[in-house]
Image (cartoon, rainbow, N blue to C red):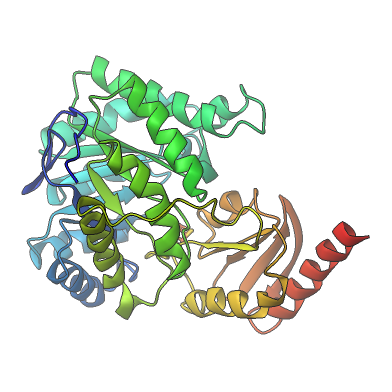
Length: 379
Ligand code: SF4
């Protein structure tokens, strides 16, 4: 298939350049605790051996940042850092990474009196000084609250788009143009719509594509395929990540799946796009990362799939998230949401907390709540 790619500008990230017609880069993220240096270096090695062009690592504390210095010493992989609220950590990690990812929706929680513009100016200055690219990573579960409040609650895409466009314009004004953008949702159709809308406004900006909380294979791969086929087929997308909820020793499956999907699209082996999950039970789960506080999370996600099979014909969404950082926000839109702490799991119905349960109790409580929803709909 001869695909005419969008004329995006080149953005160099270490030894790989995305955009400007370069091959679409495939990337992943480590899920080992960043402070476990040996495990993280081993996972980076496994991912790069599988063909990862870029590996992202979460850094939430000064201690994580210190460990990243040592991780860098032990690998030549192209590294991206994932920052959450503590944007000032950029200063500690930029010298040892190739890209900084920030989320516009997370710039509000930390140092609330400091305007986001000042924070982005700081990140851009640090990136420029240290030869780093930037990703503006907009995510459906953590939209900039100032933007979200300006739109109807049912219109989740407009605030995401506006947030991304605003941050692009701000970086352009700073004359920092070495950036890419991602707009991720757990619904593959929304990923398609969001990225098409963004690219119609900023076809020059390279896009990182992916479905957030795509879940376990094989459904997680199918959802990603559903999003990637129409986008890449339309020339949109410069780097991809397939987010899968899998144990650490299977993380390389993200890279293999990404490469397979890209090869299939290039060869025209595309499937008819189905409206995934619209009339059946949809289980979304995050791919896990170093922020997971109990490794039982991955197994729990699998168990949720098994114990809810009986409800397969009900058009409901159950979200299973691995940590307290993104779990609370990213379960709000699901019919039932679980987010995992070190010893307990929070069970939510929409944005309301149902209760906090041990890992032993949670499946029973989930089933009770699911039955309540099903009988309310039937009754
Ligand atoms: S929800 Fe938490 S554990 Fe899961 S990928 Fe996001 S940050 Fe990592």
